[in-house]
Length: 330
Image (cartoon, rainbow, N blue to C red; front, top):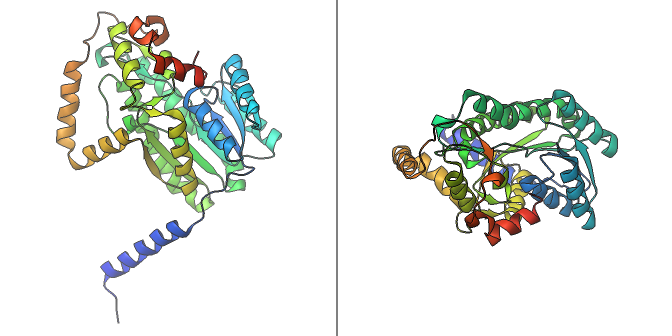
């Protein structure tokens, strides 16, 4: 008796679903974790979450002072933490970070890609160089560091965590280069997961909505700079729009432990993802309308850091100040 193909397919899918439900979460106890961009913001929040679950972390970032402060804060909580200074766009630095992790901890179990840039402003004020620069950090660095770490990850049957963004699922006005890079890294995550699965290496890509990490002050702002930054920093720290960094980190690490392929982090991210999937034309129309409400372009393409165009509205925001202090965004 031959079973219908649809029945066989349903049985196969049910078996896969059951295997996923019954599979034990990935145990982080004693695992070694390398985190790019780990000195501040979400990277630091993730480091805190990993160490709270018994992992040992290596933080990779460019600024020695930021690394020292982050490490001191984590050690005060009883964490095992080491640091390595390096630029994720420099191949030699990536290799050194992987080698240092293996030297200190005897191997590498989990690789976390949290380093990133963000540029805010009208597309008209964004240059081709802006797009190339952000792709180097947000996409090519992920590829480069993963390749450098792959032999160790294979040996450990480890995990890769890619921090993308809801901007990698739905393009948001005035974040064109950022969305460009996050769409790329989301696709890379899907490709890595498919190809690494047979080697026992799991890949999880997370797409958070806005988070209260205090990182807005490090964004490059173009166009009408003060207006752009005031809007971005306010939304980035608005409780009903953005997510607490520690809650986001907890959900992200849970997604990694479950072995999720992708995870939307935060209610706004989930809603926007479903809106795009179910009503793409309506979502596109809403984004076009949103763009009409945002500040127009300026006459030059000069960019500045958000911290240099603070106003009383942003500077005196208590939620923003607290997030900057908590997550080493100084």
